[in-house]
Image (cartoon, rainbow, N blue to C red; front, side, top):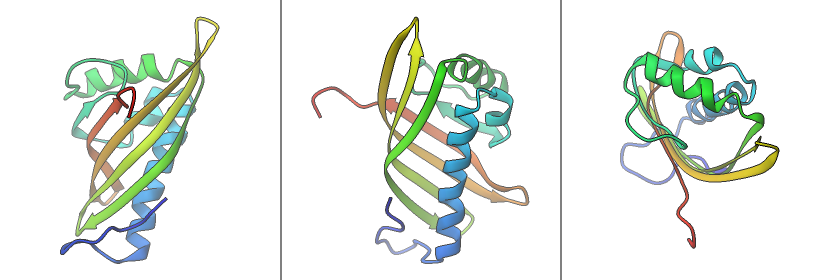
Length: 141
């Protein structure tokens, strides 16, 4: 995993970069726990989710919860980051990269490589997700 890439406004505060990377690790752990409620605590109330395995924009808590109820119910769900780029711009931060989800569905092993961008806002509760886009990596690339 890589840290801060070059850029005029990027924080070089190693502690903040590690905090934002830890926020992603916390999200992966929550998703793998099977608890949609645990995942929901990581999103700001007005967060926007463009989910990996469902169409549409999930701009309300009810839509996000509906998605995560289905997604976290997948048997043996695990996510692993394979590439990570973290940038911090004051009280806003971004994790971008690649991750792969594995799970069982209808008795079959499923592997879903995806690309992601998480945008976080620093709050008194920590780094909250305000925007999350995840999409399956197109074939052949």
